Image 1 (cartoon, helix red, strand yellow):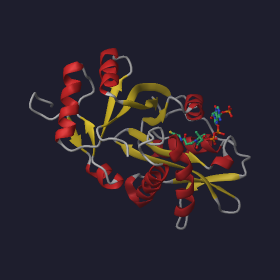
Image 2 (cartoon, helix red, strand yellow):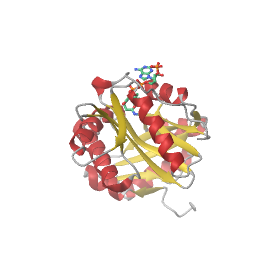
Image 3 (tube, protein in one colour):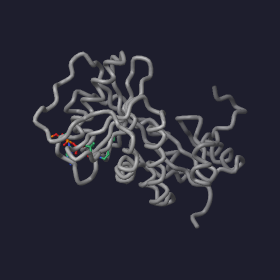
Image 4 (spheres, helix red, strand yellow):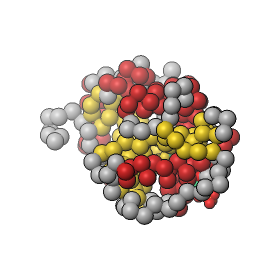
Length: 249
Ligand SMILES: CC(C)(COP(=O)(O)OP(=O)(O)OC[C@H]1O[C@@H](n2cnc3c(N)ncnc32)[C@H](O)[C@@H]1OP(=O)(O)O)[C@@H](O)C(=O)NCCC(=O)NCCS
């Protein structure tokens, strides 16, 4: 709970270490003129260079306060949810690829695809994060997934053994969270994404999930349309801001 004496920001150790800059996040989701000033004061007092802040899409007072503070809009984050997993459409059978668990030796190919996926992230939308930092972040995420941060790494593989895409689901009780999904740029619009999501849904149901969730960006129409076709509904939309407190060098 945030009390009147609690700082409105908290340092994010992992992000600060990864980017080599002091990074934190807001502890609150609503701002008015007073709390906005307090948030900036607390962030400077904590020595933060950048603060992540998420606002409700219909919270006009907060949006105004965030804009006045100089927050930079980097993402409109869309949570999509499949409210049941009892009915899962069957996938195409006449494909020239197969979906299967990742195997030893796949990591370099997964990293290459993750690097392409990085271009859509909120870090790529912020010029204060360099392109190579964002790509390294996504490579780190897929490495962490590979090393057990998610519960399963599924890949789409062609007849020659090459990895064309991946889906990484993670269980949270009865919710299966699709943490990462990506298809190699040159392989898109060949129904690989659809097959990967269907396989992740089936895997989640086998683990006892009754619903599934995926997070994407409002600007990512291909992903939204893919999930919508498979019965996912919008569950939440949030505005993501980065507030920089240090000058751009
Ligand atoms: C989103 C993504 C996984 C889709 O993979 P894909 O293999 O290209 O998609 P599919 O061929 O399976 O397409 C399935 C459906 O997705 C939608 N879709 C895919 N690409 C699209 C595009 N460029 N424009 C519009 N809709 C698109 C369509 O509804 C399509 O069905 P249709 O072919 O009947 O119209 C792929 O574009 C990708 O890797 N993007 C970058 C990473 C990403 O966005 N990950 C998801 C974040 S959660």
